[in-house]
Length: 244
Image (cartoon, rainbow, N blue to C red):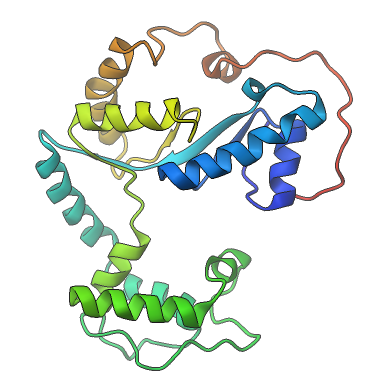
């Protein structure tokens, strides 16, 4: 079973029952903290640390050199975040209708509306910003320091390009995070399908295989086989009563 809950209850549920848990933590420090927290829960349910895989989602941008990859990543982000998209994302924090603002202009001087109602429907957008007023101040400071427009700022704060660089640089980054207990592997999210995956498979995977950290062949026909997960005997697992 694959689990995607990030709340405390969701992590506990994964420790009790899941084979893998998805994660949104792609940086080393945040990844290690999440990894350690989830893995420490496993002994409570009689499970070993290898019985639950931590798999963060990861984007990537490759180039012939690290500089080429950074330039390519900047172009991709501007294509992904239009002016209208930037305003909509800013509204999630400000909790106000900002359609009259210029996405190429400065951030609003007015503070976010912290009333009970929320302009963006859905729990994910509400949980994203625990302290909207404080976050808005941080964003203003960041925008002023970098002379960033609304669109520029949103591109910076919402960027999820986890791996950017030459194939060797990206292979180094992935290996470092896995060996450093920040992840057991990654769910790749390319910006172009299938070309992005083909490029990764042709350039990064061989480098990981050379290091002996990526399989060179499949050992079975199922996803469980591909992930190196054992096939547990059927048993009744005591539920925690928690909802992921």
